[in-house]
Length: 179
Image (cartoon, rainbow, N blue to C red):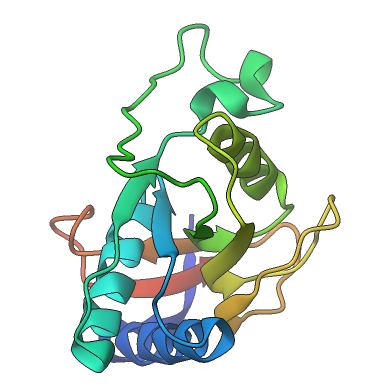
């Protein structure tokens, strides 16, 4: 894989997440009934960062959980014979809550669809919203993000990779596009 271009550095990621946090507050008229669910793996630290930004802005803590969608994927049979399933952590009730799913890259929409299926197994939210760091287009399903850090038009053959210090311990925090 040839690294083509760094499209966001650490500072740009922070600015994008700060804007997303403000947009979430504006659209929802504050923090009441909001919960964040990070989609494993990179959506989890992004959700935590957004929650921390909201806490700094509003002075209120909102619940954050993590969602593993492995068993909800429509391509499960194409994955490893024994896929690795991580834990889902939702230590709060999501009934009648505004659930905001958080992910790193929105591409075909299949991950988001699987996440919505998983959420419904945990309760009946008031609504489900989607926040992504990168929207690269090429949707296969009628899914759109409510909050977008950066739109990145890309060719289908290109790969967008998000490196986060929380997960990629020896990597500089950045978003790259490669072929």
